[in-house]
Image 1 (cartoon, helix red, strand yellow):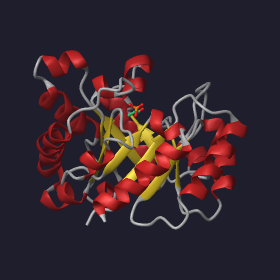
Image 2: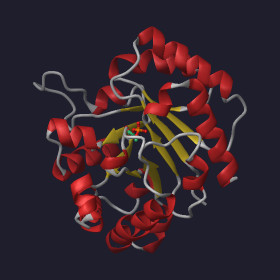
Image 3: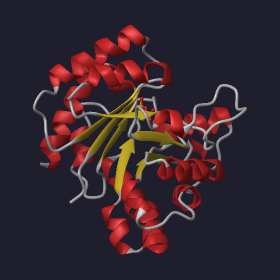
Length: 255
Ligand code: PEP
């Protein structure tokens, strides 16, 4: 049994006071919820206040990115040593990082290894662009990202890795993938390579989230699919009622 995981990627949104307000709102709205792991990923500067506001809620906390080095002359970067004091998770290789900040499968791989060395759980993002989707390259692109991003990890380490399948054309566009389509890509192009790399047990045990215009209106469809184990939620994670509803509906669909 894979415990579903719903992670909120706040991106570059919410000030420190707004962070406290949203975390408090979610705590109240999700009181007593069980069966779903909830992870919030605010901007770096809000992680500490978010940790304090989370209290005993049981929600996890994640960073949105990380450097692979422990420390050094890397102006503007944040290291796993800093993050691990506050967070359990770190999002790696988000398509916006790949698109705007030059991240590659190689850098994602270095970061994933560093995260795991420091006891952080990476959420490794993969997904094809619209042009790649239209050219029928989805399977090639996604499986290549899985192989590259996870190269050299051990089967034991994979117990702490989640993968987020996020078709880029569905992120922030309001145009979500179809649930069946996303499930097929995950089964073929993510669990397939996972089987080759780590064996069937790991491929079956690894949690794979769907991301791309997830809302309370479509989450049930996604969570009714056998290979989808949760969501990575952008826009809808910024609103207390929407995010809380997504978590509740996930608990219902997977319960
Ligand atoms: C994301 O940022 O990972 C994402 C899926 O965004 P949205 O839910 O807004 O499409």
